[in-house]
Every structure is written in C-alpha cells, then in structure tokens.
Amino acid sequence: MSDWLDTFWAIYSNLVLTIGINALLALSIWLTLSCGLLAMANAAFMGLGAYTASLLTINAGAPFPVAVLAGVALPTVVALIVGLPTLRLSGVYLAMATLGFGEVVRIVLLNADSLTGGALGLSGIPQLTQWWHIVLAALIVLLVLRQLRRSRIGRALEAIKEDQVAASLMGVDVMAHKMLAFALGAAIAGLAGALSAHLSSYIGPGEFGFDRGVDILTMTIFGGIGGLTGPVLGAAVITVLPELLRSFRDYRTMINGAILVLVVLFLPKGLWDPARMRSWFGRKPSYAPTTGADSPSAEGPR
Amino acid sequence: MSALTSPSASAVSAPAPMLALDKVSKRFGGLSVLEDVSFAVPKGCVFGLIGPNGAGKTTVFNLVTGLIAPTGGAITLGGESLIGKKPHRITRLGIARTFQNIRVFKEMTLRENVVVGMHTHLGYGVPQWLFSLPGYRAAERRAAERAEELLSWVGLGGRASDIADNLSYGGQRRLELARALATEPSLLLLDEPVAGMNSGEKDELMAVIGRIVSRGYTIFLIEHDMRFIMGLCERIAVINFGRVIAEGPPDAIRSDPAVIEAYLGREE
Image (cartoon, rainbow over all chains, first blue to last red; front, side):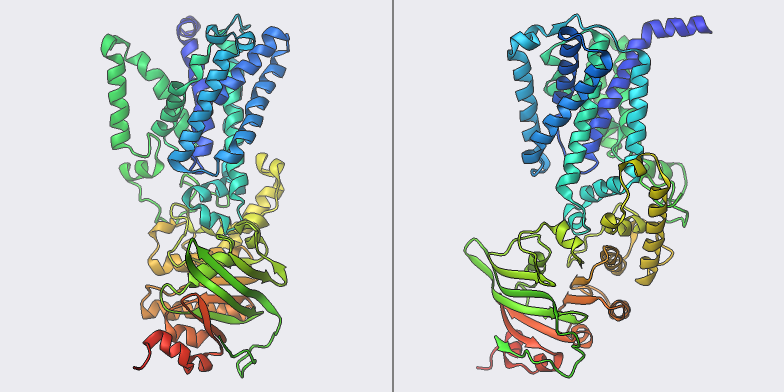
C-alpha cells in the first residue's frame, strides 16, 4: 500500500500541489466575485507575490517565511493603491481597468531586466515549498474565508453583490468592503505566487499574464461562486481535466474546451450549486421550515 | 408656496424639526428637478410628501439619504448637516428608507435580509468572528432573534428561513420595512409603501405602519394613494414640478386650490 502511495506521489505530487495552488488562486478571485466585482488582476498579484518572494530568497537570502510574508504583503499594498480609483468602476469597466493593470505589471516584470531577469525570468529559486506548506495555506485560507462568510462582513459582501445601493442604505460602507475583498484577494494570490515560485524553481513574466488571469476566473466560475466549495472543486477539475484527456493527444485542448462550454451552458451557476442539487436529488428547496442551515449562505443561529 | 405653517389641531406635538430641508435644489444638467424646496418634518410626526408623477418626490428621498448630492440648499437631521455625507453614514445617523421599486436582497433569506440592516450594530471585531468567540456568537444569536421579532412585527413571522425572492409583492414590501427598522432609525422614509398592493394588503400595511408610529418613530412617506395618506399623515407637503406648492395638515391640503389644480387641472 505504501509502495503504491509512493509511486502515486512520485508521479502525481506535482499535479496535487498544482491543485492546491490553483485552489488558492480560485479562492482569491472568489472574494471579489462574492461582492459582485469582476476584477481580473489576480494573475498580476500572483506575479508580484512570486517575484517579491523569489527575489528575497535569491538575492537577500531571506528566510522562507519572511519571503512568503513579503510576497503576501506587497500585492496587498499594491491592491490598496490600485483599488482606490478602480473599484469605483463596475462590470466590464472594472474588468478592463484591472486587465490593464495586469498588463502594466507584466510589462514591468519583462522590462526591469536588472531586477527581474526580464524575459528570461528568474531561475534557480530554491525549492523551499514543502507539500504541507501548500496544504496548510489552503486550509488556513479556507477557514478564514469560511469564518468571514459567516460574519457581518460576509453578509455585507453578499448584500453588495445583490444590490449595492440597498446595502449602503443598510449602513454598509460599500467602498471599504470592496477594498477589503480586493486586498484580501490580492494577499491570497500573492501567497499562491510565493509558494508556487518556490515549488517550480523558475518563474517568468509570461506566467502571470492575461491567460493566467482567464484561467483563474474560469476555475472559479466553473466551480461556482455560491460558496467556498465551488472554487476549490473548479480548481481541482480544471487542473486534472487536461491530464485525464491526455489519451486524446492532439484533440486534448479541444475536448477540454468543449467540456467547459457544456458545463457553463448546462450548469450556469457552476458545478457546485446546492440549490440545483436539492432539486435534482429530490429535497424541496427553501420552503421547508427548517433552520435554513442547508442553504449555501445560512447565517442563522447554529 | 402657500405657507400653512401654523400647527394645526392635529397632533403635531413636538415642534423640534427632525429633518429639515432648506431651499434645496437639484439640477440634472439643464433640467431642474427641484427648486428651493423647504419643509421640515417634525419629530414623532407622520409626514407625507405627495405630488403628481415626476414632481421630484423620490429625488427628495435620494437627496436625504445621500444617494445624490443637491445642487444647492441645506438638509439637516436634528441640526446636523447631511450634505456631502455618504449613504452609509446617513444611515448610521438614523435615517432608513424603503424603495418604490422594491430592493430586497432576493437570494438571501428573510432573516439574513434583516440582519444586514443590523450591520453597524453588530459590534464584534476581527478576532471574534475569526475564531467564533463567544462575543461573536452571542451577537449573531441576538441579531437573529431580533430579526425574527422584527419579521413577526411586520407580519412575516415564521418565514425567516424563506428566500426573499419567494415572497409575494406585498411580503417583499413588508420585508423592506423590517430591514429598514433593523438599522434602528429615528426617521423612516417610505417610498410609496402601498404601490401595487390590493386593498386588503394596503389595510394590513397601514396597520403595520400604525404600530410603528405608536412606537415613536418619525415617518416621512411618499404615496399616491390618497385614502392611505390622508388617513395616516399628520402633515403633508405637496410638490409639483419641483416646487413645494402647499404644506399643512390633511384637511388644509385637501381644500388647497393649488393642490387641486396640480392634480385635477385648472378650470378654463
């Protein structure tokens, strides 16, 4: 049995750890989506975290925890600065502005040769990330977000998503909550970046561009934004799917894309949608005079 | 502006104005929506704002709640200026409102809708919610209990776990009322609370509002339903084309020639 596990781990450890990193990224964009913001800067925040942490361990010989903390802190600060003007936008305008910011970050990483290695990227990053670092990071982030969702802040974010005018008239400081979601998302993306850089030992500016941004968004939307399970599930499926489709060789990406399209068409709220599951598996939705504890966002007394 | 400012026989007891608008004007580009609107809502009063469609009534509410800024004039609550304050600050000062086009949080339960209204009163900090400390749990439990109390107060008792979207039209209006009350306001703005309701629902809501009034809230409401507004309000202001054309107790308003003209047109 342990032989089997060793073999499995030898082959798939990278895949499993990638799921962990992707889950963190999916959760990072979930935060902004949960208050109705389509912000596409998470790949850039991941890049900032990755470069910050890597430069600290390579050049300054900083201890790993310090490097990771810096990789979390810098994107957070940048998010607070960038968020102030951009989060006043909504819908596609916010998406455009944050995509623009992402391009700026990518171009800076590409052209600041002396610091970032330019197009060659940074290589020789010490492989300091242990598998349990990623598991621990994912667990802590999940727990914090779970608690957040159950608090007045989580409720305020949901209210903002549904109707921000009504939320503001309930005394919710809409801008402050949007900033919090954006900055916390940036922190989580930075954490994912710092950990993944020290897993793969190489990073380049191309990894943190538009494609990555779309990947992150896809995982979350695909999994479902109604709760925390969706993004994690989406990250797992989207990471594993290309591997499962390896036998289709040249058609792999095509089939991968087709599956995504089908899921989005038939499961518009994502894979994890408790309301749909209830209706599929026979239990009456919402009307049952229960405590409501099975609703995705129940805050009621427990 | 016909000045009918002398306190009437009706029960306008407290002379101190709760909410006062002084020469408030609002222009959208070249379009003047409100011009020199001045009136005061006395404390503990039920104050009605009426006027034909497009007269600028909802604009008054939007100005008072800070959703839009006036072009000129002063708005004060208990002497404190509301100009330039963000909506959530104004809510915290004690103004709550409902909307003409219902704006409940449709995908939340009734309980959650009402608890959102308690946002500022749930005074627990980050460590409390992060680690589910007793302070957090007690506050959330109290909030849920209070929400259920408010819901039963507006006649939605026992439905706290329902999704708001599943409520009837009248039910959603009452939910909005409960949610507004949850912010612990001193002044409650109701924007056409009985619009689109049948007469049975209207009577129910009138009773609910009557109960709220008896608890000492000040109510400022916009309504088209004359029976409703004449039966409920102690003072009424009438606006037409962005100007106050009359203000006073219902009896005076009913017989005011300017009001009759605004509603029925001029005799040729």
